[in-house]
Amino acid sequence: MREITIALAKGRLANKAMDLFDKIGISCEEMKDKNSRKLIFENPDLGMRFFLAKANDVPTYVEYGAADIGIVGKDTILEEGRKLYEVLDLRMGKCRMCVCGPEAARERLKHHELIRVATKYPHIAKDYFYNKKYQTVEIIKLNGSIELAPIVGLADVIVDIVETGSTLRENGLVVLEEVCDLSARMVVNQVSMKRENEKITQIIKGLQEILREEQA
Ligand code: PRP
Image (tube, rainbow, N blue to C red; front, side, top):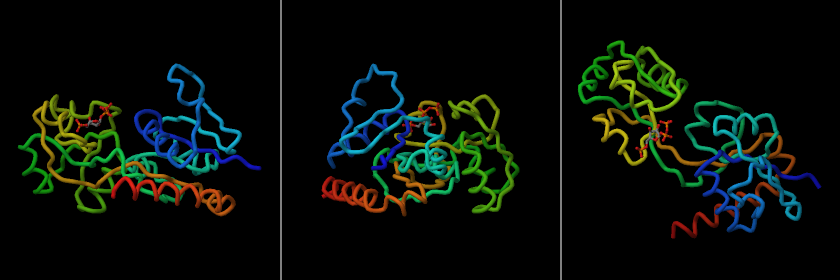
């Protein structure tokens, strides 16, 4: 029997996703040991394996079939633009992708001035400004603490994730425009979806049921 492999984006998302899988009887005791440095965890009885990867790499593992299923944020899915099926919104890790900056930048944005945009998500930012707003901007890729960029004068605005809004507030920045809503999604390799259709459909249906119950 071929094992089903699930790639999880490391961190909070992975823990929450494992709680969900637990509820449909897919558990992995090995993974609960927080001190373990193991990268791959197996449940041979269920014919399943799990591994933790950097969020940005999860769509890559899934596209190439090294994982049949991936659990990853919509931000990463959009940014990576990999060939895969997005099959389920897990409705956790909800947040928004926004254009943020000092209030003073609002007018400059409106008047389609050539502004500098700092972001960890250059593809999402490009798609938003070029294809949706038809606005030419200069995009500067950063790797973290994006809110610093407008404060120190590297960029006029940022495109970044806003969850509670406290990072913005504490740094004197505001949401200027909303790009899209985000949450964790389940993605599936396109070949696996056909070859392992029965097993994967069963997992999707199980999770859908749990999500419905949790919402009710
Ligand atoms: C994310 C994001 C914002 C912050 C938003 O950063 O890039 O900086 O969280 O959350 P809030 O609205 O609840 O304040 P993360 O902590 O992932 O680190 P990073 O700066 O390294 O990207």
